[in-house]
Image 1 (spheres, rainbow, N blue to C red):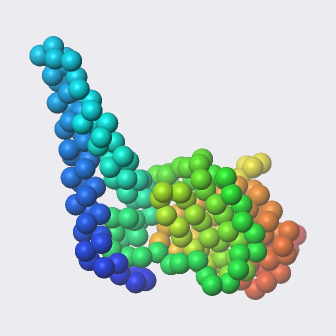
Image 2 (image 1 turned 180 degrees about the vertical axis):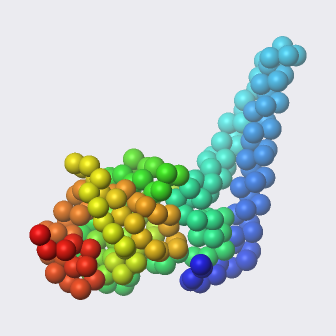
Length: 188
């Protein structure tokens, strides 16, 4: 199920071609230099590989976005993810972590934004996504320091493992009393 605005066709086709071409060239350069170094006895010259590395890094980030988001909403896909709402975030938690499905884990540069209407997630270099509280099905305790959240939002994979401090923030700001959040936190 896809929703949302389409990216301009030139944009996602450029990213797809760029990612495939750069990774193919970068891998080929590495293999050629290793082959020459191991069989022919030539001293490998990794200058070209080094020059390609920043370009390859961008292509690798595009591939990583596919782990966090379904293909249609990844950097390679044709749909834009929903932007954060215009309302002000109640709280922001920086320097955090996230696990999305079993495909993607990040311990770096993750920010959680708690909005009255949902959760915003920003993963450095990968992308941002907004999860409306109406699309969150269930939040369950997974351990002492984390919760698991299942949802129906097609823009990000499910379930999402989130730090306990995000749930504590929702409780501390008494969002659990609003209709959007109350159904996820039954009394007791």
